[in-house]
Amino acid sequence: MDFHSQRPKDLTTLVAQIEKQVVSFRSLTPFQIRHRNSDRGAPNEVSTVCNCDAVLVCGSLKEEIMRCQSQTGPCGVAFLLPMAMLMASTSLAQTDSVQPLRVGIIGLDTSHVVVFTRIFNDDADPEHVPGVRVVAAFKGGSPDVEASRTRVDTFTAELREKWNIKIVDDIPTLCGMVDAILLESVDGRTHLEQVKPVLAAKKPVYIDKPLAASYKDAKEITRLAQQAGVPWFSTSALRFWEETQRLKSSAGLVGDMVGYTVYGPSPTEPHHPDLMWYGIHGVEMLFTLMGVGCESVSRVSTANEDVVVGRWKDGRLGVMRGFRNGLSEYGITLFSDKSVLHSEPRPNVYGPLLVEIAKFFRTQVPPVHPEETLEIMAFIEAADMSKARGGASVQLSEVMR
Image 1: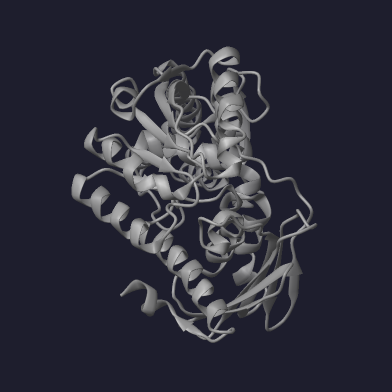
Image 2: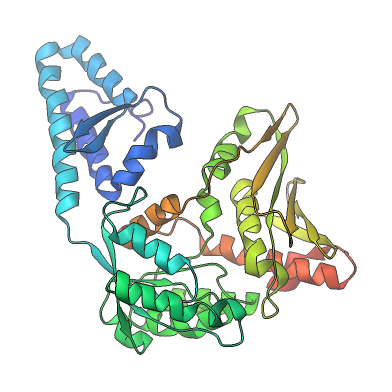
């Protein structure tokens, strides 16, 4: 809550505002709380340690308490500030006492299943996100995809033997054992059929990138989920990368933003549109920074590199460079009418994504709107069409109609 935009008129109103602010803590994990100061860029925020967790007290709240002190005397404030801290610590204690959500995984042919399970299940992991436990999984796998065929048995064995995850024979059985689903199959072609029993079971689901292997399947997943009333979202961890978020928040501070260029690795897989396999990470970054509203795409492609240019409705240009060989780092450049900003070489960690997934499973409010995900899928298909047409510009409406 912004205490400056809605100033309390008296102590009673302030108490009510404190209660609403503290309730918001119940949707935060310790990982979020530990990082919230730097994420919000608010130097006047204060963190107080309570039962080994950080309890956030906004500087604006402190200012309001001090303002009330001048109006009502120190007695009322002397009561309010300890009360606020007590309410916050009690709220966090209640959060800690809630039973973890039981989560099931579909598709054990990606390294994500091991990393996500470790972060959710291992209390000692530096990126640990509490409140969620992976308890069961369905193996899945695609024999005609090398990245699936050569890894699925190894990842399945690790989950079973190291993490004591129960491996089940089918998705309906899995859904009956859990509260929410991570659909992790590396092959986007399988996602539509795999998500159908999840939607039938009314389980909230995170669908790892790519959402599907075609815009048509992606649109059908969206339709079926809406019809079933089941919340879902799909994204890349690069959306929540520290540098993506920093340069997104910097856009309004450096003049009128002209556009962004992002780059990263983009190897391909023959059963998927080129950018849907690994280039989707860069595309997700680009849309996180630029927002929705891309109208057309053109693509220049060589043996080792793609340069994809999107034109947005407001005239801005967003550029994605994908490298099929060698380069494995990600980067961003922001262009404004006054300056140019570059990303810094920071590690891409999964913790911020899993914080969003855990919060989504609790609130069932997706952090990424389905319309944005569909536009990303259309952008990728339009890029393939542009390549086939020798780099000609392709309207996204041609894909989305």
